[in-house]
Length: 314
Image (cartoon, rainbow, N blue to C red; front, side, top):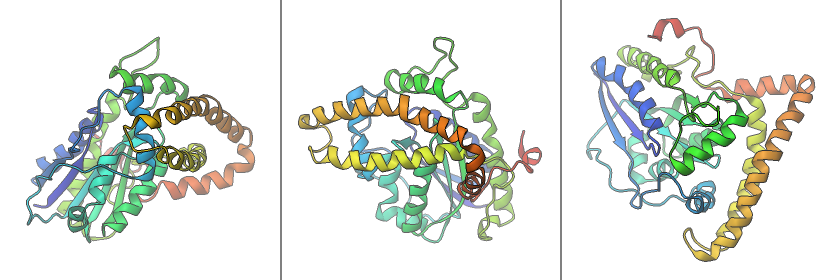
């Protein structure tokens, strides 16, 4: 029997559903799983109001996380594997998981331990995962695998369905568009990762230093989105510094600059991003070698191959 720590923060419930599918085979195999749900001292709203949603932008990009309530993990607990699940806020890991990774307790729990990261989001997770890699390394952990779940609907459809979900809490079909978020089929399919992890733990796979989830289509990457993300994140860093110069989160003097940023964000989402993707498509013959190298790099460590699907899909 191995001890597994799962750290979760699921604002919408979607990530909690995916995490439950991953955990179930571990527990069924006899491994002891401690699920730690992060609770901010001041809860973030759900659904978001537009003002609150925009006002959390600058701190998300700057990784300035508010404190969490005390963890329920026993002081003397030792774990063989740590699974960190997270959402993406403004191309960065959600603030609760950032608060955890920056804590002294996380440095004690992760030091020298194999770590698996799991993200569920609309589609852009690459920049956030690079940040997670850095924070895990700074905490002394060893990133072993990464799993990514995204909304499979057309990107243009998600530009409507995702904001509707975030601002109203409604994720059902709307105006003929598919439901927002990760599909139910994909959520159920998350079980294969728990089965593979249970098998690896049974055979001390966590001690080998190698990925445990290869061949399971763990983290397929669209390299064209990666290029858009990099440009977006550079702009976000500039905007976040400007907004923070107007005051702290929640202060009224921030409101005018937040209004300007909201206009910029809408314009970027509906013009710059589609135009960037169109330009990359038109130049795809020239960019093909670069995009292939970028995809291979970003899909590490678990990859997007499918050679083990038949073994673990149920």
